[in-house]
Structures are given as C-alpha cells and as structure tokens.
Image (tube, rainbow over all chains, first blue to last red; front, side, top):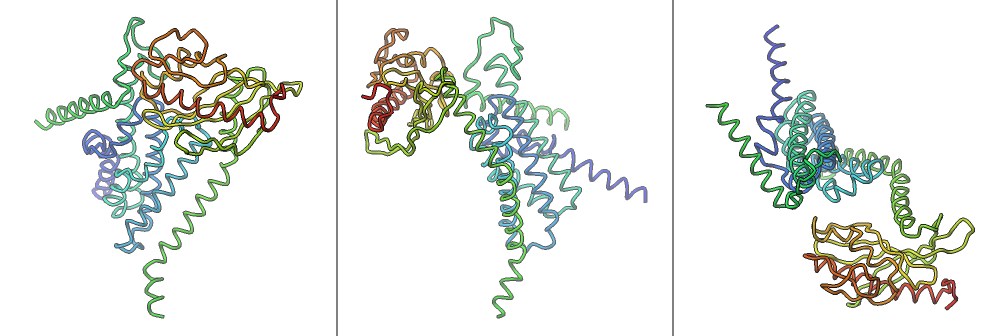
Length: 207
Length: 206
C-alpha cells in the first residue's frame, strides 16, 4: 500500500517537473519557436504570453483527458483543435478586454497559440492517455517551463536593449543600449546561447 | 437509416462539443465585447485629445468617408469633430493608414477647424523596425508635422527638421517608413479637406 502511494507520488512529481527542465519545450525540445522569437523583446509581453499558454494548455489537457475514452481515434485531432481554439479565443478576448495594451503588444501571437505545436503535442502525448490529475500537472509543467524560458530570454534581451527590466533601470548611467537585441538577430543569438548553456549543464550532470 | 446511425455514432461527441465550445465562446464574447469596444473608443479618444488639446469631447462628423489612393485603392475612414466645453468646433481628426516597411501603419491625424494647419499625428498601430522605422513615434520626426500647412508634403533626405513647412526630413536608415508616412499624409489630407468643404463643416465656410 505504501509502495502504491509512493509510486503515485513519483508519477505526479515526474509529471510536474518534466516540462520545467528535463523536457523544457524551449531549451530542450525547441518547439513553439515562433512566439519565443517574436514576443521576447520585453518581460511583460513574454510573461503575458506564457500565462496565456499555461491557461490554454491546462484547459485543453483537462478537456482531452476527460474525453479520451469517448473520442474516436480518427477524430481526435479535430477534437483537440476544437478545444484548443476555444480556449485560445477566450484568452484573446480576455486580454483585449482587461489587458488591452498587452493584447496590442502581442498582436497576432495570442491567436497563433492555436497552432503552437506545444499544445497539441501535450494533448496527443500526455492528456489523451493520462488521468485528469496527471494531465493538469503536465499542463502546468510544460506551460510553466515555456513561460520561464520566455521570461529568461526576454529579461536578457530587454536588459541589453534598454538597460531596464519592468521599467527599472539596472545598468550604469553610461550604458549604451544594444538595439540589435530588440531585433530578430538578438532573439536568435540569445536563444542559441541559452540552448548551448542548457546542453552544457545536461552534459555535465550526466557525466 | 444505418448510414445516419453510423454518422451519429461516429460524430456525436464532435457535435456536442462544437455546441458546447460555441456556447462558451459566445458567452465570453457577449460578456466582454462592450468592454473591448469601450477600450477601442478610449484609446482613440485619448490619442485625439493628445492632438486637439482644446477639445473636451469628440463626435463623428462624417462617417464612411471614401479615400482613393494613387493606385486606385480605396480606404474608408471616419472624420471626428473635436468640441470644447462651449460646444464650438476646435478641430478635426481621422484615422489614416498605409503600408510601411514591415506592416501596416495606422495613424490618427488632426487638423485645425479651418483645415489649414495640422495639429500633428499619433501612431495608432505600427510594427516598424525598432531603432529605425519606429522612430515615427519620436518627437524628432512627428514634430515636423505640427503646425505644418495642409497640402502635399515632400520628403527630403537632409534639411532642418525644426523648420515647419511642406518638407519632411526623412529618418536616417528608414527611408521606406518615412516615404510611407509622407504618402499617407498626401493620400488623405486633401481628400479629407475636400469632404469637410463639401459638407460645409469648415468654420470659415469655404
């Protein structure tokens, strides 16, 4: 009995931590790259995008997990897309109503969450085969991992491009802003360096 | 009959889910759409107030104004009238758009009540290159339009940006965006003046 509890706990712990680091969607799996490159010019839009993805991922995982025994296998992708697009539309409407400035800053990237492969990947790989609890934890884990990665990338880019984070000046007064960090080149270079760093950390740990 | 049964067996979940998700979106939309509309109006009003400072209120003066571009393309806009506390017209504003370097540029342009001088412009939407094209939001560029005579503008690569006339000094490294800005003004401003004249809304009656 104690062994069963411990096995379940391990399973929950695994579901909660996998997406945060071991299979981080941005640094380890390199999926959902479009918003990673586009919305990481500042921390605020990156955080808003990350929270939107968590909302969509958790909600779609819940729906997919609940219907997993009812849906016909050949109709599953259309069902997943239906659920995902509903929650993305709700997130988009919410931002337009309550965070209009952020909605404007993110532009088309919120509606584009519908085609973010991270969402459908977790629906197919986890939620369609797992219990409700595991699916919720998986959504939080992968959404959280994605959000953390976006925020790290955005913090580096915003700091180097403006000398500020959240409008708080963190660089010396004579700091010359690196405008290239706000442009696509800044996103690619920062992402490449962070992916390299994560590879190095994994390599060191395994060796 | 068996075909219908087969169809229902296969797709009942899809049909029920479609209905349920449609209802969810409709509920969210009906709950939040008044707020979304209000946000849009507030943003436009704030931008117009920033340009026509003497106005305390704005109301549509002419709706569905058709603007025809150089290549025959049509744009529809609304001309708003700025009104002060005494009810007098203090100026006119409208939304103008055109294509820049990266994406569409949307501006709110304001003119005085005689439509002789520009109050200036504010950027409603722009996705121009940071550090280059997005300098259209900076005073260095936008101030060249403040107080400029209503008419055709000419873009020059070098000159004095502090001199207010019909020449606009381009942003260095953003010639396409600068040209787009001048084109937007040249496309809209005279047609808007013509519309105001035709409707007899200009305060000198001309």
